[in-house]
Image 1 (cartoon, rainbow, N blue to C red):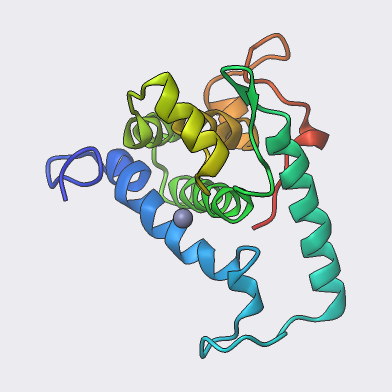
Image 2 (tube, rainbow, N blue to C red):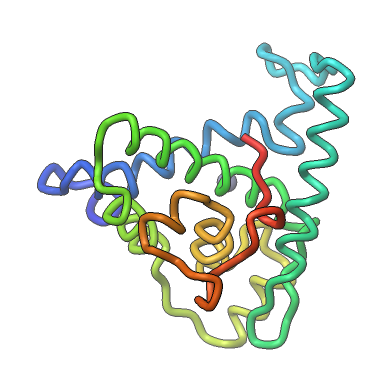
Length: 176
Ligand SMILES: [Zn+2]
């Protein structure tokens, strides 16, 4: 492990935006579209109440529609292909946001650390392959779509309706 994931030299904000995000992402996979179909012993079993499952499906459809609306290099993001990873990303940022607020961390710095964690350079051909085949959204979407779905991002960066990352509140998906 090394920065930007984790370094003993890093601030708490950098640690939470870095390794904290990764841990929260992996834990959220237990409650993503496929993980939620397995019980605490790892057996495939329906342990949900019916109304919870109905709400879960309704919210996941909102996440699919939300990601389908993003484009990179004129290519639409496939909201179905990337659904479980997007759920884990959204859950992770919800979790680090909650942690930051509870522990009086600077939320802006936490979100900046999150963007540094995912920063990447990629050739157009590799990007196209990723958009078509990878269950992870591309890094730019993992940052922009996730932060645009996070209410606290709007206050931390004073985002206005005229800003590029502004998404109306009712269109922001939230599951966990
Ligand atoms: Zn994942």
